[in-house]
Length: 310
Image 1 (cartoon, helix red, strand yellow):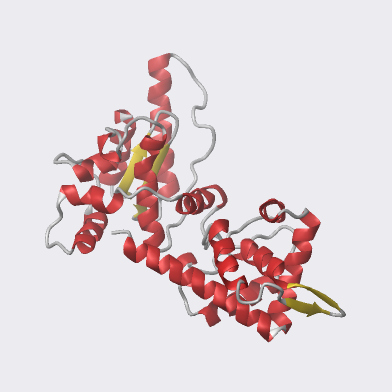
Image 2 (cartoon, rainbow, N blue to C red; image 1 turned 60 degrees about the horizontal axis):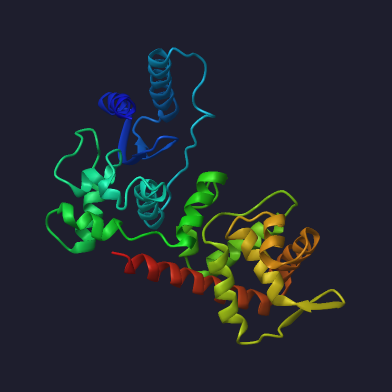
């Protein structure tokens, strides 16, 4: 692990990377970094190649060591950035290597929480966040754990892990994820309409919130009119399942099978509900209004959680 950190430090020294947070475990690593000159792939290729060469030489082996190419995901908002730092810090705790992130030797939390740090660690952004949260003129190591040491709840962890697995919210180059969710509901509604009009069997939406958050907002809104229906041609159908399926697809990035599993329906039933959602957004003003209320509730809940954490 020290060898890997030393190789990473060389890339920082050469001006290719800024490392803001990290955690190195025995089976994998997480980095929060900025690619200074747009050379992320080259820099990480050098780090991994030199590490594998050293590892193989010391153990008299050859061949590849890493299972696959590293994954890189864009961090697109302050709220998500804050959660990514907490996620990285919590890795060693989740692996039962320590009880607090500050105790783990090969994680940046120890450097921010203690007196000793690495000269190659770019501390300015995290220290500024801590100072603002504590309204302090100077960064105090003890404040780091008070700000970033709050454990991720299951919904926050789900969003971070989902983005690592499937890609960032703007992986298709369309929107900046959390900024979209916290925009005016009318803007989000127009975006949902455009996305729903492009619906097909394979495409999924963005990963902005966890499914439980959507379902919780829907339960609150459905109390206003639990038997609400809307028309699709000559048919009348319950509207809430369509809203649920549509938002699980567009705001959680679930596949049709995942929607079916989350809602207790079949894959074909999930597809019918998603297409009904698209029709409702395109043709029914009452449907639009209900969806807008749910989106507003999701955005307000996210803002409240973000402002309350520090």
